[in-house]
Length: 347
Image (cartoon, rainbow, N blue to C red):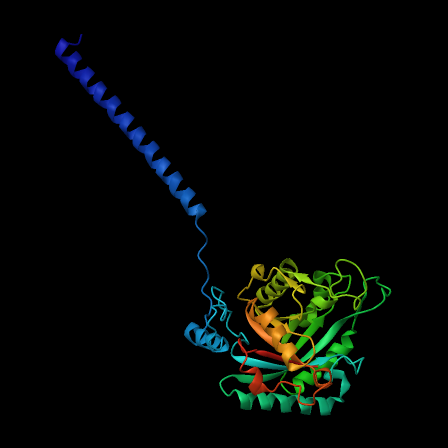
């Protein structure tokens, strides 16, 4: 039989044991709770990004600032845009392009002249631009209309005609002979950018092939191309940008250049919503023919006042000189524009 003293000590020991067990359980519960919270936080954090090569941002900034040509409005250069991936063509090069189609001598200098004469003339224009601006390397390009708008529905019912691949292959060979890049131009008619660009994927996977899209022939509201001027919205343009960006990512390519033609206000809508990505460089190209005054006003109205990223300027050997044999802008004259165009197209 236990004595009262023994009973008292036993009760004290039991109370201490129960308190210790309870504290341990609470500690374990607290530890589990903390661990659970830590896991929750870790799950919310992004996975660490893999390291990727970067460009010399100081050099890039200086070059785009120079293109802005001391603009005092604050529009140029465009601010808060992502830097491009390494291997970007712009703003390190000025692209001098000959535009056209091999099926027609009326669509541009590319197709109007025989191969050797055309390439010789292109190299001559490249040399003129290089002499006018020694700070920026000048490179040649063949800008081929790979999908042409049609005045009738055709078999597809889409008012567009895709050029056969063997014709594009000819352009590729010509470009290779002078170390030129290639632009494939798309006029969608009643089709969609997604479907037409997809049809050219085998070429756009190549590092020296780029894309151009022409809102003039986007007949989303009906009608035959040529009867009225079409348009692309920022959503349309962003779709093209994303298609190119995916090709760059999947195929480990340098950035693509996307040229967008424009010569009226309504041809491109929602310019502020155009999404610039590191994989794609966007050029808004001042299209349209006429005298120098008209073209300059168009450039100021639709290109200068609505900044996207880079700018281009189209020159028509025939239509710009109909009323004035000196109506074609010279490189020196265009280099005084704000911003300076980095893409020059001859038709």
